[in-house]
Image (cartoon, rainbow, N blue to C red; front, side):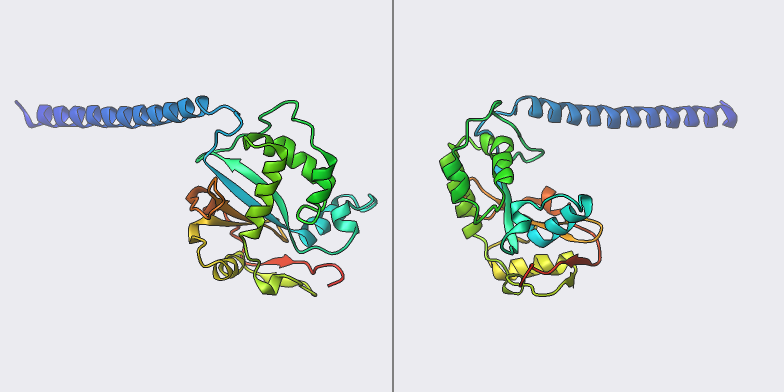
Length: 240
């Protein structure tokens, strides 16, 4: 056999192996995607079927500043028109390891207004409380009373760093510094159990992962989505 034929045979074999390798990679990816789809199909929006919670703590001055910018002529929401707030509870959200359920009962069980009034110290907006119950609370598998008791218990488990309790002037912060302050104030909080969110200008939220019994727990997927900006603004607590 001539060297030319040997060379052509080697090249043909190399191309064939390359195609086989590519086929194997694609098949593996499709199989993994199929498994994820199957897992999602087995996890419908069913009350009580979730893996952990995310406690979302919103920096209220940022929310109010953004709301005023979007609709300068609108009457402020109760959260922004009454007494000043620092970190408030945005929500306690049931989560899957990947993704999350929502609106697990449509229509949602009616929320007693006494529950709304009892939780305005944590979530200072009736509209927010109704929304959070309909969208997230119905997925907890708990009654409304038990769910908002869990919201309160989750909030009480988190210590707010003292330098954010009564901010009397705007502060430039890095998301990393905010996360570090929460880790220091909560020594049992895992480093990969917290995520900081931001807008283009302001610090938005601190999100903390908690188990179903409301202990801190790691959630690497969420932690990886933390804000990557170098510096953002924490507006001052109004009147502080």
